[in-house]
Length: 246
Ligand SMILES: NC(=O)c1ccc[n+]([C@@H]2O[C@H](COP(=O)([O-])OP(=O)(O)OC[C@H]3O[C@@H](n4cnc5c(N)ncnc54)[C@H](OP(=O)(O)O)[C@@H]3O)[C@@H](O)[C@H]2O)c1
Image (cartoon, rainbow, N blue to C red; front, side):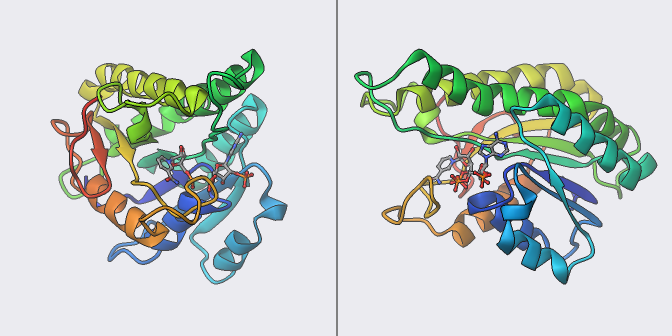
């Protein structure tokens, strides 16, 4: 896809979400509107610092487990982007409780499913009219629209050889299915839907032991997104562009 004019990122307070905000400011044609959403904007000090010197950034409250915050964020985005709609939604917010078969509880399963699956689903549903608006107004020289779900290699049934992170693996496999369903629904409406594995990355979730820096990961993810098209979008792809088995 061509450089997006408007981008919305969930979970932009830290980790990969925050780095997406920073790197979208550095691309050759930065977005006109960069919506950095997080559940506690007041606590997102580093994001606030970045936004101080960049008027394209709008920090907004959006907790993916609270529908009212999603709806409020949608209204604010709508008022800013106007007829152009929203070009790119990155469903990045996620949690990983790293529980085993011994320690997992029903509440843990529900909590993780709620954030990692219901979160992207209902955020997408809320912003869909704006994504469709952008897709409708797209021309060869104007960007179309896309939805990118942050998945994980840990979602891959083919690559799973251990029994750790039960709730996380199950939720990310479900997110892959959601990606496919959205792709089927939206492919003829000009919206590319894809899912990415960002690598094992040095964030709070990935820990300092991870081999990939946030900078390397997000740089790669943006490159993969820029190469997304109707044919290659709905494939689990890693940050270097390699397709992975579901
Ligand atoms: N790091 C890795 O190695 C790795 C590998 C594969 C996939 N991923 C995926 O990449 C994405 C980003 O991961 P990360 O490493 O950056 O994780 P992270 O450092 O733990 O950051 C998670 C982000 O999600 C936000 N979040 C959590 N619950 C939320 C909610 N209910 N509503 C809105 N935001 C919420 C957090 O906000 P708060 O600051 O408010 O908590 C934070 O901004 C996740 O989907 C993750 O599964 C990461």
